[in-house]
Length: 318
Ligand code: TXA
Ligand code: MG
Image (cartoon, rainbow, N blue to C red):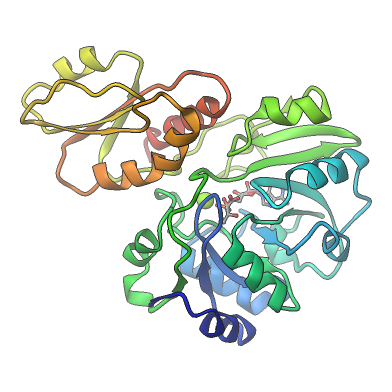
């Protein structure tokens, strides 16, 4: 059920049910982060393996000290600068956080989401919310309440409608080695914006399927339709002549053709707009009406790096 009635959502969350919540990045499947039973429900609903830890959502920087300890100065500085916002910090956890959330790690991933509806929900609850993206494990992330509804039609999930997600890409995830910030996942805040504050980042991109083997790619954020990433769309189109082709393009439309469907992410060439439209465009192209999706590689700078990372994962074979 899609609703804008916060009382229904608050009531459900207080009774250990799962509720889909809007954030500025993507929708999340939220539940009481302090109760192991509720966390288990999230993993089950998402069909997510238990070795893949969840992000905890809190209401303010102050609330951070309730769940994390030994917080590096650099982390506090980044939290002050970017929260509420799409930055997740991986910090030493306090005992109050169940091991199930962290996949047995002694660290917890945490952020303050920047969405008025969800901030209001967090302010009215006396517990933080664990929330992975509101899609079955490995599939395209949801940026509207309707995307979430499409995934969980049969489960009668309560979904708070907060409109279209403003950023459209998951949060950037940072860990720390002492005071040295380490980039674990490219996200809605480009790495260079973080480096401007925290200095040079070390990069160890985490793999969701084999968290112990950083740097590897896993199939994730993936459409059902066969998808390819290319710097030269015209050449690829010739290879698939006769097939129904879906094009995911950055800024320039392809000449109209009866067998070609296309989504242009940002006609003005703005990466932030491209990010906002990205998952919705993939959802649209993946509706079963094309044989193949050809995605154009984005400029490899700023948010373009995050978009290319998501595309790279989308094309991995299962
Ligand atoms: O924007 C977002 O971050 C969205 C919204 C809903 O907040 N959430 C999201 O959650 O993308 P999810 O579950 O799809 O991705 C969370 C990722 C995990 O895949 C894992 O790599 C990382 O966060 N993570 C969580 N806890 C961690 C930990 N203790 N150490 C390292 N990585 C962790
Ligand atoms: Mg996800």
